[in-house]
Image (cartoon, rainbow, N blue to C red):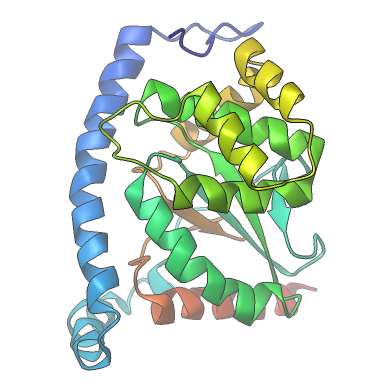
Length: 260
C-alpha cells in the first residue's frame, strides 16, 4: 500500500524511514499509555476505587492547573475540521485520533458522551476531530475515508466515526480496508454517496488534508492518540478521569468568559 505523499511545494521532504521510525517509537510509548489509561477507565467504573485513584493521582497534580499544559495555546483552523456542537461555543475541544487506537475507542464511547451531555448539548463546548494516523498504513485509509464523509456532510461524520470505532479490530492487524470502510458506511445509512466515498479513498482525494492534520500533531509534539486540546491548551491529565477533564473544561469556560 502506498504511503501518503510528503511532497509539498516549498516544504522540505521528510525521509520516509525517519518518519517510520518516529511512528514506531511513538507507537511503543502509546501502548504503555494505553495500558495505563485502559486500567484507569476500568477502575473509574467502581466509585470507591475511583476516589482512591483521585487521591493518589489527581491531588499531586494540583500545581498543573487541571492537568493542562503550561505552554502557549495552539491555534487551529477550526473551519477545516469536523465539528459537533455550535461553532460559536466558548470552549473548543480538539481530539487528535487514530481509528486503530483502542484507547480512542474507549475515550469516544465512555468520555465523549459525558462531554456531549454536559457541554455540547448546552452550547458551552464544540467538539472537533483531527486525524493523526500513525499506527499502521490502514490508519491512513480510515483517515481518508472519514475526510471524504466529512466533506460530503459534516453531520454524517460523527455516526461514521462511531461505526468505525464500534467495529474496530485488533490494532496489530490491517483491517481498515477500502471495502470494509465502505461497507460500514453503507450499513450506517449516512445519507452520503458511498460510490464517491470509495473513489475518494482509492484516489486519496483528501491526502493533503490528512497529511496537514498529521503534521499539525507532529508540530505540537503530541505523544500519541487520543490527544486533547481545550481552547488550544493541551490536556495532560488522565483521559479516563472525567472529573479532572471536566475541571479543565470548566476552567476554559471561565477563562473564555473573562476574555469576552
